[in-house]
Amino acid sequence: MDDETPPSDLLSAAFVPVASVEDAEITLDAVLDRVAAAGGRMTVAHVVEKAGGAPDKASMEQREGLAEEAFDLVRDRAATAGVDVETELLYGTDVAETLVEGAHEAGASAIVFTPRGHKWWWDLFSEDVADALVHESDLPVVVLPSPPADADDGDAVTGDAEDE
Image: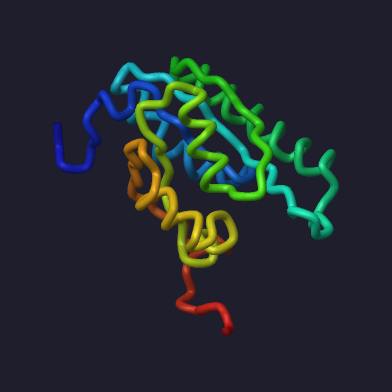
C-alpha cells in the first residue's frame, strides 16, 4: 500500500457526502477507484439543510431534485466501477451532526470526502462543518487529496479570501 491510499478497511463501507452534481463528479473522481480497489461499498449522502425557522434559500422540492440529479450520476458511475452504492437524502439543521448520524445509520467504516479549493470548501462545507467532521466525529474521517483541477476550472482557488 502506498502512502496515499487509506487502509482498505476504512473504505469497506465509505460514507460519502456530496453537495451537488458538480461536487459528486469531483468527489467520485477522488473516491470511487479507491473504494473499488478496497472491494468496498459506498453510501452517498446529501444533506438538505433546514433553516431552523429562517426562510430557506430554495424550496424543498428544488433541493431534493438537485440531490436526485447528483444521485443519478453517483449510481451510474458506481455501476460502471462495479461498486455497490446506496444513496441517502438527509435533513437537518446541523450538517455535520446530520452526516455523522447518517454514517452511523449506514454502518459506515468512515466518512470519506475530498476538500476542494477555498471557494468550494466554503460553499459546500463551512469551516464549522469541516472542523466538526474532522475533530468531533466518533467515526474515522478520511480526507482524500483533491483530483488535479482543470486549467479552465472556474472554481479553482484564486487566492481571494471572503470579505469579513
